[in-house]
Length: 68
Image (cartoon, rainbow, N blue to C red; front, side, top):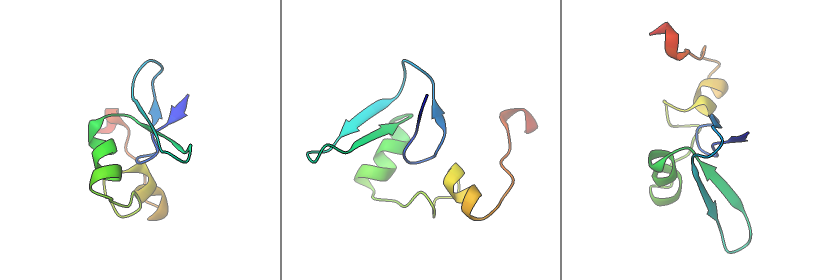
């Protein structure tokens, strides 16, 4: 499976968005929220608190959906 370029989450087969730049770079996004944050708003995944990338850099334990 492919991973979301912004959050680092795996994208289920048959879902998500693929963005291809003019230079041939391919970005995969899980949904419109992650796509807009990366492309339009130019946010860094390491500084956005709800991404897996942020949790890995800050060494915060990732919560699974069942832990809530």
